Image 1: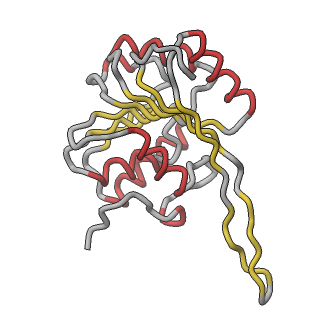
Image 2: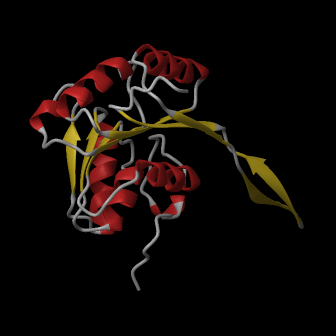
Image 3: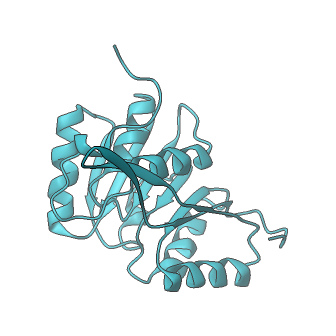
Length: 197
């Protein structure tokens, strides 16, 4: 029976040494994208392709472009696409924002990694579709600070959630809660210039 909610177990993905967005973070991030059945989505800094896979499984009508620059990660995305039988994901080997203008215009973008090009990526996305819906994940203090600075300078109204959670882990006959790194989830529409934060 086909699962109709996002939430593929992390252990189901072929991962290697490439960082991956955790299951719980994927679910909330995808919720914040406000997708519809005909969405065209850029997954920028796709890593293992876990977010792209979760989105693509929601509807065969959704088209996802998994954009990644590391060759090891590109190979993993292709393996995961094949494993889950997802025909609506196209893997793009590129460092964003280069190459985005060659793709069909997206309605949504998930940004999991920027290689320090966040401002340039936002500028390119605005040129492609000024009303695009964006969700950005960040874990380092430097990334969080840079994202907030860029959004404030552009007067974009955004929502920021800080998510932290723990998982139970067996320790002998007991169970302990093991904390995962906290993550910041920024969500906004590019053309929402109200200036409220």
